[in-house]
Length: 233
Image (cartoon, rainbow, N blue to C red; front, side, top):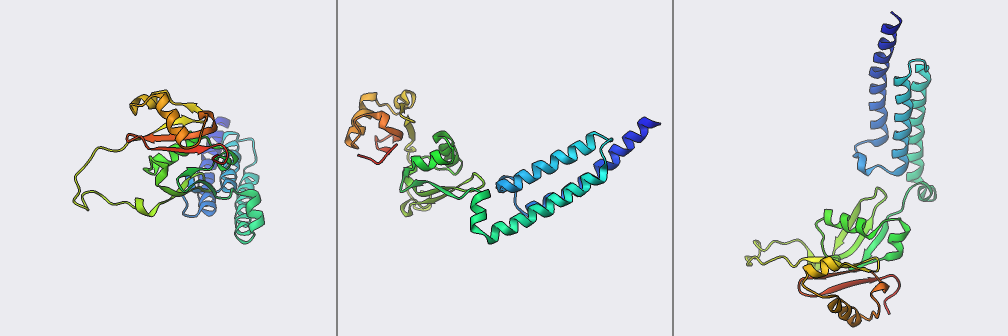
């Protein structure tokens, strides 16, 4: 009989907590998807999840304090959100400012390092936006939720060859040839180039040592894009 009571308590808590959790999460998130939550909202949901998880798993824990804690956390988070909207100083303390990582077709190394992103992560975010050549970008900004916003250069606005009645040609593939000061020999071979070809291109750009370049890419036509660790010599 005691065991049946325990199961009944757990069942009752699951029903009540899930309903409360649903309304609390919607109260915090609004219509925003999970991936677009600010850090503080995300942490609030994690804490609420930990509280209700313990309440469901252990019938010995008092139920009403858990309900009270969820309600208070939700109201507290909502209050903080309103303060963040009104106060720029507080917003800077508990949220991430948008960070420019690419400007005028060049990566900004110090900004990428500041937000603790790797070059591979930046390139992956760009590929998800169908950007394979950073030269086409006027500005790329990493937002507070970790997503990237891109403003293309005017001459690279999207237009199809079908719209212009132009013949279809092979894609001018752009690959990474230097990543964090290291030559990518595999991609260099795919581009049908040699290391000497890359070094010559770098000299033309004013670099005596490829280790001074933290990112460089080249297309099939031999056009190279370089991003130095410091200001270009």
